[in-house]
Image 1 (cartoon, rainbow, N blue to C red):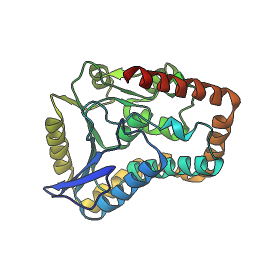
Image 2: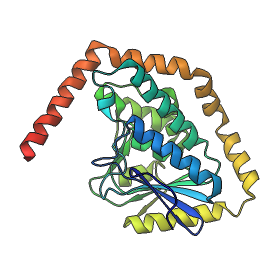
Image 3: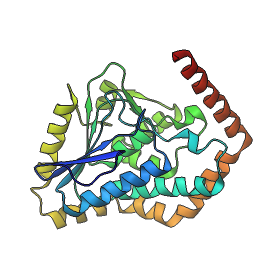
Length: 264
């Protein structure tokens, strides 16, 4: 059964659980309007669903991370709104009042890993190619403290520190071995089935007690971001506006154009 949704975020409801599919070709990169649509979907689902499963309509990519075009020769007003919207997306997803699970059916770097680690449970489809992790340091960005907080809270301080300092992307098997994902399955349908069962198990708890427990466990990182949102936006804008960062993005955009021209 379909619920109200936008073209970029498709919501379907099965047995009381909402399946929220990211549907922004080509790679579900997180731009301003797309993130606003995801936030709207979370708000819609949180009101009357028993759980939320986040997945992708793309066959090989869950979410490729932030849309770097938002940072290239940016308008500062939009850039600030872009980052504050990402903050809001993290706050809504990490503090979601109903059980959430990620059915990760492809690549999940950077912002994709952020969305996954905000969920209460993660299932990833077996693949020789798909990877997941926070690799920001590899392309000149610094993962903000709240990215680090939710990532660390899944895999622990030592593993998170080592991964962040190496811009590490984990294979599916390695992600399972460090606890970044909870289960590996053969296909997307199996991932959704496992996520649904996990949510149904969580639903056996009294809902209000479940929500209060989750929010108590996550209270510190959520409160930390809420208290530092303005400074965090300022830090991001300062980094992106630096000449060195813009030169890197210029080279990156040119490489994309070259790759696109080769395909024609």
